[in-house]
Structures are given as C-alpha cells and as structure tokens.
Length: 288
Image (tube, rainbow, N blue to C red; front, top):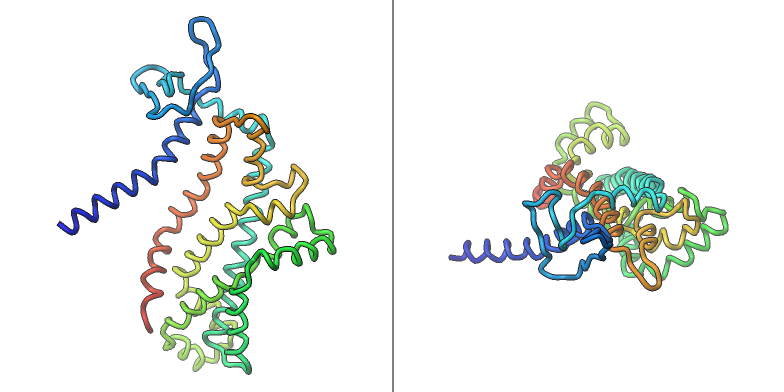
C-alpha cells in the first residue's frame, strides 16, 4: 500500500511538472492567425483544456492547423543563432573553468597539508554567507574599469569558480580511498601527477555532476548577462527571450518556440552525463 501511494504521488507530480512543457509545445506549433472561411482568424491559446484534433491533417491545436513555421520565424525575426553561440561560449567556458579550478582547489584542501589550510577553507565557506547581490556591483565596476563590458571575457571570467562547487569537490576527494595515491607517492609521483593521473580519473562522477550543475545554471543565468551586455549581438538566450515581448503584446507562439529550442541543449547535456550524475549521488555518500 505504501509503494502504491508513493507511485501515485510521484506520477501525479510528474504529470503536473510536465504539464507546462506540453502547453509550451502545443503553443509553439500553433500559428498566430489562420485562414477560416476566407478570413484570417486569431488563435486563442489561453483556452484550457486546449482543443486538439490529432487525426486531421495537419493536426489541429487550439482549433488551428499545427505548423512548424514558428521555429523558422524565431531565426528570422531575431539573431537567435548568434544568441545560441554566445550562450554556448558563456556556459562552456564557465563549465570548463569550474571543472578545472574547483577540482584543483577541492583536491588541495582535501589532500595537501599546508599552513593555514583550515583557516583559509573556513574563510572560503564564510563567503557563502554574503549575498551574491552585495558583491555583484563591485565586480561589475571592476569589469567596467578593464573595458570588459560586452565581451565574452567579461561574461565568464568572474564565473570561473565557486565556493559551493569547490566545497562539493573537496568532500568528494575526502571520500576517495587514499591507497592508490599512496602507491603513486611510493613510485615517485608528484602532486600534479597524482592529481591528473590518479585522482581525476576516479572523480569522473563528481566532475560530471559539477559540469551538469554549472552548465545548466550558466545556461539559464539572466542577471549577470543583463548587467554585462547591452549590445544586441552579445545577448544570451535568456536576454533574447525578452525580444518577443512588447509593452502591449507578447508573441507567445514565438516565445514558446524559442524557449523549447533553448531547453533542448540542456536536455542533451543531462542525458549525456546522466549515468555519471547518478553515480556521483551514490559515491559521495561513501567513505573510503
């Protein structure tokens, strides 16, 4: 009985969570107007439940013939391809920086013994108590001083590492068995060799989880690109979605098409690293 109730609740939660995506998909394939009885008729996309006739050709959604033209129009009315490139560069370089620097910092705090290690790590953790909105203005002023506004460097340089992700990598390295590294020390391996050839291969699940968290968070980031970009050619996807809204009207069909196109890379990244992501949740709870 307990399992049955749990499954019912999980299925209900999945349906409720998946509902907005279904509505977005239906709206994205709905034309803004269509011809009916020789006249152009607008589409009421706010009707619920939506009227769907999958057996007609083309299938009808909201009483209108379904079309994929909205996806094409997204690339015609705005520089959407350029925004995809900007977002990929921003998210990709930020993810690479986190994977490299957070793993190096986490390994140093977990394995290396140096004066003031615990104090420095405590200070790192103390910065988590400072709201991000407090530090964002000084960082922005620093970017302005070095003329990094509206540049890729200004987007990703302040985002190359993070305290939370560094802490996550430290905890993972603390839970790794030390026998293999001790054998490498006996063989004369230095710190860098132990890190790159011994520790990193064993940390693939944690690195994959770190990459997923960072990539998804950066891909959806809005505030920092809003501050750092004023040139239309440097906008990211989250900034570009505002172009489908005006003061009096929102082009919902185009916005939903652009939103689904924006979501597709995140789904691909998650599915590609899903196995490592699940493994990280299991192995980080184990002691060496």
